[in-house]
Length: 401
Image: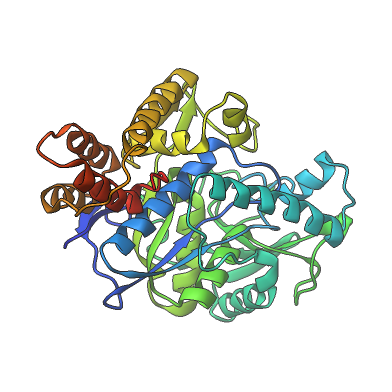
């Protein structure tokens, strides 16, 4: 068994070799719980679930972390604008207090977890909240200060990216002309410098720290939580393609500057889900949630099937017509399995084909093609078809049993 994964760090297909034989540690960037997730957001977690199910299918033990960002995610990658959680408080007319933040976070964290259950996504082993790791986040910022990677501005503590020679190695960031970059307003030494601890300013909403009341930067939260729960380095870090230029490069920079070792060995990124040629965006309100799918009488698992029809690194264009086509195929598969009651033996020839598709960078589209070839194969008994399909469903997660 050789699983090959496309590592964004090297932009190449690589054989996956875990740090500890037989065990896999995974960190997945979770949601900022200020609003409902849309179906584009959910692709990242379905991909992470497929990855987990695949390595478990091949007999490896998994420790999986999906974080919950409940403070510290600014509306702009340039460290400007409201915190997204504060934006949620204002939208829902909740008090600008820590208790108000907790109320908002509880509501949308529960909604997110409900979406995961509806999509038959396995529960991660750890669901850490950023506000539960404030002590570790502060410790990490202090460590970066002590090592000379941080500097102070009136609105917070910033990471000096020029101090790290290989900053931006994920995805190959293009050089910028520092001489013409507009830095006057922010005061940052480089436009790519990023906040480690943001001071609250006039609203005084936040947490005590050595630098004043405020909240951790979005990036520092992930670095602190992954280090505490998985150590450093860990095996696999995933997220959407939009995380590559800023969030994931900043995670790498601060973690490697602090601990002098890689953050993660493999970086995997899923492509976007678009609707009418535009990327879905939660912050802009240009997305639809699972509730809209249910209102049209589609099962959330039909959406899972829809995403499995495409390779995770292939952009997907969502439309109701495309979802209906996926739903028809999914219902057809359920109708085939439904009358079968006697479970025979797994057909090893088809299992080998199925595994081969997964070993090639989790190619679920080709794996589904193997499913339909099996369904139509008159040489395989119904009992053995059922056993084989149920075996495949350990990865597909379509709830066929």
